[in-house]
Image (cartoon, helix red, strand yellow):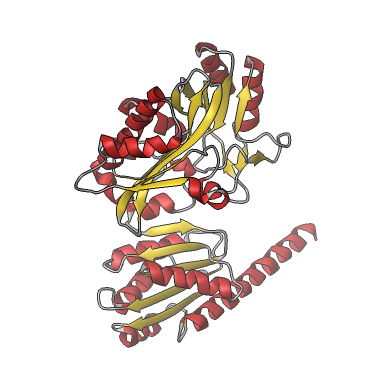
Length: 415
């Protein structure tokens, strides 16, 4: 689960990580009022969306070069920047092509930054340990830092039994070329990050940049926190921070039913059991020239009801022109479970788009026979390539029919 920068900074402040003064606004008037309350000769206005690259992003209807993070030297600047952000879509390298709508801006005190560092913490899949990543070069994506200057990346895998001790944190900080006082603060920040990582069940903590000001202060200018969805049941207060407006079609509903779902931009709805099978389904559609409408992985232990909800989710997506069900029943997930879910879903919401099914493994023959006897029109496939090809053709045919129907309605109105 992702949260906004302003929410992450509120948690930083709670744990003692230094941040600039700032508040969140949802209107231009609120932004102006916040700026007047904050001391200083300047402010920073930041669009609040769940995506990185805001500073380098752009608004289609704003002047060229003015992204989602802007310096304001006057109240008039605050009014202008907030007005150009609120209610408009910010496009970055991490958003959809159409961008993400900005419903809030964060107004904070500007700092006279002399240096920018990078700090991050995540679980390294290779070592299976929480790993601290640091660099003396901050302010840009860590991927860019690693590509341009890989030797500047410092990593520390943390022993889960020993935790992150002061000596280990000091050793890492010593490589960042800080003075004694700055190093002391940075050491505390790193130890606090680890405390938060464990206590809040996060999957990512990132401070980019951790700034050194002209006055020698160490301060977190940005904050990114991502939480492990599987641990949210332990954190009702964190769950309350979820911004439903940032979720794409179906993602909240999918999460409520324990379905792994990611909305994509295509027109072929995908349902598979197992993340590997789901990825292979998406890849096969792409390889053959189609566009998947989603990634959807129903856990192998799912019962009929959960699979039915997954199908209902696909059927409710107005952009879906065909559905591809690709399941290999490997013992836990049985193909007849999928068949029963399709039959039940069709009874409640009759299929309005073609459904292609590739069922293999446990009870596959029995499941196919049940589907043939039950009535819904199913296009059966022998393997994944055959299924992807048939789903693409079915989607194209549906699109042609929809266009023909639209044109006939237009001609009927104009005639």
